[in-house]
Image (tube, rainbow, N blue to C red):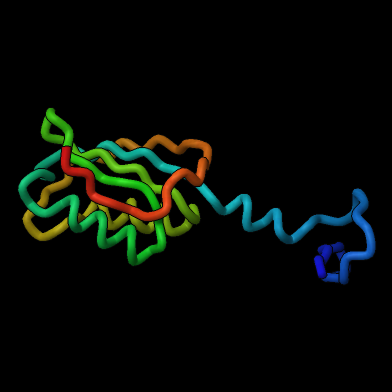
Length: 121
């Protein structure tokens, strides 16, 4: 059974009209995608493994990989709040890392990944 939210409270769905908002749309709005480019001392310090662990613990999907210019690139998909937490963890990084900057580009959620993985290529 669906539910509708009205100004007076939540009622069982009896029909949808302009004065009601479907609660399921709230969940759809939470999904997000963020593409990160991380610079600093982020290669050779277990940064990819750290990012993979963080993503798994937050239920995020996507990938992380080293770039040829010494940066690390990551793509997160999942709940926006958890992506923001992951970005915060990426600023910290593992103990031997020194993050100078993270460029974050927010993108439209695609839902194209089943898991999060470190890419080694």
